[in-house]
Image 1 (tube, rainbow, N blue to C red):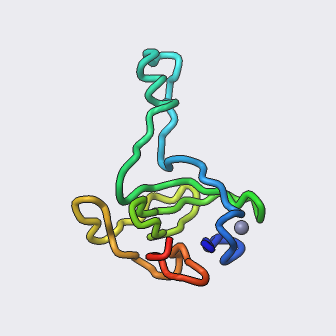
Image 2: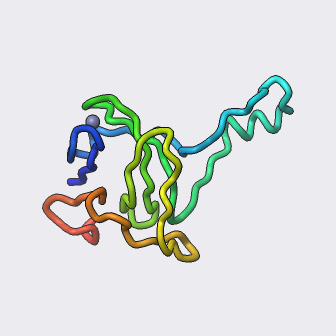
Image 3: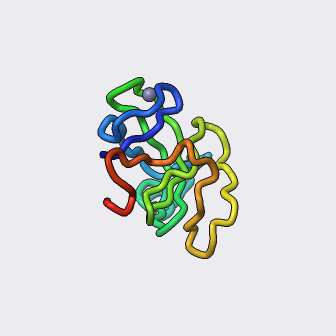
Length: 119
Ligand SMILES: [Zn+2]
């Protein structure tokens, strides 16, 4: 069983959360001046890294509040949780693939009844 720390409610089962997509995508200042290709890129093109990724999550079946998460997509470890509107945290030593060690062990994705190797 997996769990996540909501910054507002505390640790809850992962099934209560929903992934919102990549974080820190700036809205275009003047969309009507954009080309169709640039608009399509803004709407649909997202990063899909193996390693460090900044994401938006919502506690759908809880407080329904949004927050940002820095997650390692390879290990599924959560490296940091921070408020919407805050800049992404600096992750020390992300390595060439972004496979960083957790900055703060508290916001990690917890595995209840097993280890991460059991996933
Ligand atoms: Zn919550």
